[in-house]
Amino acid sequence: MAHYKSKKITQLREQLLAWYDRSARDLPWRLPPAQGLKGQRPDPYAVWLSEIMLQQTGVATVKTYYVAFINRFPTVQDLAKAPLDDVLALWAGLGYYRRAHHLHAAAKDILARGGVPTQPQTLQKIQGIGPYTAAAIAAIAFDQPVVPVDGNVERVLSRLWLIEAILPAAKPIFWHEAQAWMSTHRPGDFAQALMDLGATICTPRTPACNLCPWQSSCGASKQSRQGEFPKKQVNKKKPTRYGTSWVHIDPDGVLVTKRAHSGLLGGMLEVPSTSWGDDPSSDPCLGPVDLPKGVTWLDGGYIDHVFTHFALRVRVFSAYSPKSLPVVGYQRLGLDALAGAALPSLMHKIIVAGRSILAAQSIGLDQV
DNA sequence: AAAACGTGGTG
DNA sequence: TCACCAAGTTT
Image 1 (cartoon, rainbow, N blue to C red):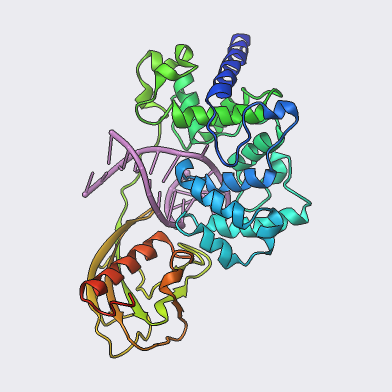
Image 2: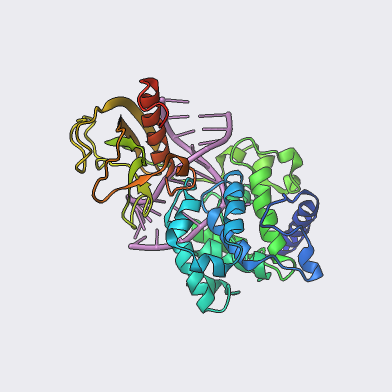
């Protein structure tokens, strides 16, 4: 690298750290800036947990889940010995449920290794930890001299240097660019500063350039081309799929079963449902199982839900039985236990839709 | 390499 | 309404 650029990077790095010292966000898993210089380090377990939760998930959403999770499982030992279903229940609504499966398996792995590894190369051997998360944990928890590269860092660097390379194919280019900023000086704070800058100042839309410590050095800002960076491959349009679900309630609660552990919503609870396909038609009598007989199924309309790679429209039917009606392969989830159950947001929406149509018909009014 | 994998917020 | 976006990883 040219000497002038190396010198420039040193200058910019110090400007960013100074900005971070006065502007760092106060987050539940974070130590205040410069605490590392006084010999303090954050709890590696807390850093690991927060980084897994933050994968493709906003800070505002993660905060609530993180606090509940760390209170329920204060240490890696607590997590390792917990039943998987308890972990999934705490993860319900957060999405990308494979993360919760990996987290639980990784807790046992970490215990076997005698603690959270300190080196990126070793961290990456653990389930759910890829190149970004390995670098983030190493830098933040252990002050290892690496620069984690996430969406924030890609956006900040692409604007600063006017990097035209198209993501995600250009990820290696960004990774290489970022390591040029590596230093043995406050690696943890620098990593977090870069991400805070991207999250609060150098935002995807309408960045607050006037508040940016790098404004005078930023290529995109000088040319008013912030919106052009980073360059990304355009996404394909999502297909729409259709299905039908049945919300059956009796005095013991709503009928649910556990989904397969792999794949979409793996290991989470669902109400009786068809598979999801391209056919929009539905039949209220054709359930996936032997649904309770002799009940009246009410049309609950449909609910729309959007997954990462397809949109879903689910037709909802609901019914109430005043006496208990067990179904083989299914369990009853008490209505007072819905909030603490391993129900994905989609299923929560479906159950709410089913209950409201019953309530509107004054059916089982004191029950549903 | 490209697709699978959630959800809620935002313009 | 709709497309994009968020501290990515796995297959």
